[in-house]
Image (cartoon, rainbow, N blue to C red; front, top):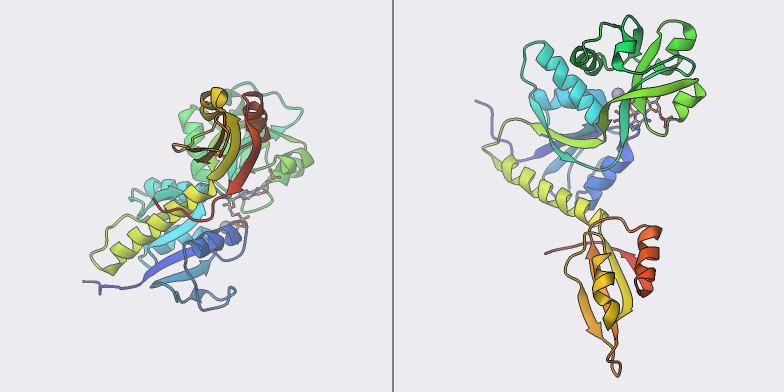
Length: 300
Ligand code: PRT
Ligand code: ZN
């Protein structure tokens, strides 16, 4: 029997695209760690939650082995490793728990700009370079396409120019890398972002409560990040039109001004981003002196 543990371990990428946002999220959850960032293991000082700084590809495996309970990785990494386990007849020992809203990208197939493409069937017989053979394999199987998967661990985008592949399947964010390599995106296989993953098993020790506590705080941080406080003035006659335009708003607070029976002040927390277009629409509907403020903490 394994010894009960009273500390939780969470693994995040040591250095790379997800590192800063992952550590920022944990800091916003009130976690403070003792070691400097370049060390592998950081001791949690504010809560019994320790941090492991590792390569992103190692995180699902560390959870599967029981070295840590939670981790932050791109969905692309989690899905690829999950399919890999399934291809060996194993059940992946980790599951996706939360979307975290950063590190957004997509896994796409791209072909040389001048090549024709209408449907997935046009990929038949091609050599497709990728670091995601499982996700690509699943896509090809689903579409009944017989193509050759060329596994590369980096610089996938130059494979067509080098003549080692006819197409690629790689992560795309702005699309700049594809354009720079005269490639064009033809199909999206997976929409990705950073996700919190965790072990499939429930814990019978302190870790169960710690995990719940951390999840509650993460939910709070995500909710606050997407929320804005909107303040504005409006005449009584235009109030309902203006309130109807506030995106995902809680019940607004409405107050009147001393000595004015017509002018009202409205404040509302909106759980969505407020764009310039929203403000233009509100103005047309009669809103005046609008203010959009970030929300720092929220407790219902
Ligand atoms: O060293 P370690 O193994 O930990 O890091 P890594 O090199 O494997 O990963 P890293 O830091 O490059 O990326 C970590 C995660 O960030 C990925 O697994 C994705 O979930 C996410 N992410 C988000 C991206 C991108 N955006 C991204 N644009 N990962 C890679 N890219 C690359 C892509 O491979 C291509 O080369 O950026 C290029 C495309 O970008 P655009 O903007 O030109 O389209
Ligand atoms: Zn990696």
